[in-house]
Image (cartoon, rainbow, N blue to C red):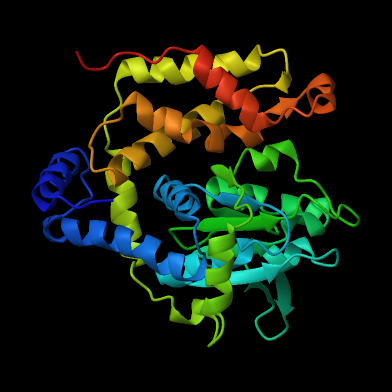
Length: 343
């Protein structure tokens, strides 16, 4: 992303006038926040080679206030990307390797009886952090997966009838492998719907793979990833993304898109209202990253597939014909004419 400092300053001043919790000090450092966004991509790119578009999608989802699911074959860099992101953001993070023996109490915490005080004391679980890395989430039991439902949606956990809030901002980044199904549990649709986006990193090109091998001659590139953004920075950027303007015609555009999935003959389950909200949030964050205080149709079309493909369910005929969710989302986009906002 190229920086135009005067344009950025005007953008922040305009957005801040609609977002009451943005103060003058943050406004003075508005261009620094954009520099931090650029540096985030550069720092993560040290460890994840040749996947700038994936890195951008993940950063956009985080600015939009969402969680991220990375699904791909083993060894392509899912966990590396997640760890690099945690280091770049400088927030407290916990990483949990999900296995069949992980219990819900390991995730959300549990209470123990204190004989001295005669009261129950809460022992925090792994989610009590800003950034929770759930590695191979599909290798644990369904009841442990479901323990994340409340915290992903509401930012809180309930143990023994007492609700406790997790630190803010709170982000879940989960990885899963679509192959090697023995001993795995598919995520329920209700939990898939709680992830803002699902991304697939894919194999590197030959040139990129050579670079990766060379980069690891003298150590792990993850060791060189530096912190460039704080929790306060992310808080400001999220507030600014919320203040981005969306024309009423664009709300109608998103409604037409999601309704097209609900009546598509290759889908047995269309996009939920939560999916509609996610598309708008992603579009607003995308506009902010591109230096605009308003959404245009291209913001919606560029985030639509990655935000919605995991929220739909294919019919048996579609699966038999090996039609993918991403292909259907592309069909939906092409079938709905975007509105003219300017001119």
